[in-house]
Image (cartoon, rainbow, N blue to C red):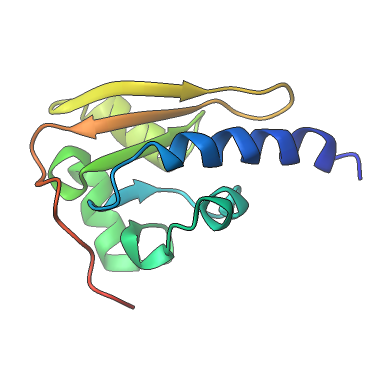
Length: 121
C-alpha cells in the first residue's frame, strides 16, 4: 500500500507520456521497475529493447541512438548511464517526474529509423 501511493500516479503519468509516442519505432527502456506504464499505454513488450533481451540489450546500451527510435531513461538506470556515455543522436523530448519515484526522460533518436520495429518475440 505504501509503495502504491507514489507508484500508481507515476505510472499513470508515465503511460500518458508513452501514449504521445508514435505507434511505430523501437523503444530502448528498462522495464522491470514500471512495466505497468507500458501495460496502461497498450505498448507490447515486443516493441521494446529491454533488459530481458540479453544480446540485443548490451548492443543497444553501447549505441542507444542507433538501436532504437525512442530511448527512455530513468534516473540512474542502465539506459540513463548509456545515454550519459553516448548522447550523440539523441534529443530530449519529455520528462516525467513524481514524488517518491525516479524521473524518466524520453529521447528521440535522429539516427534510428522511426519505422524500425523489433521482431515479435
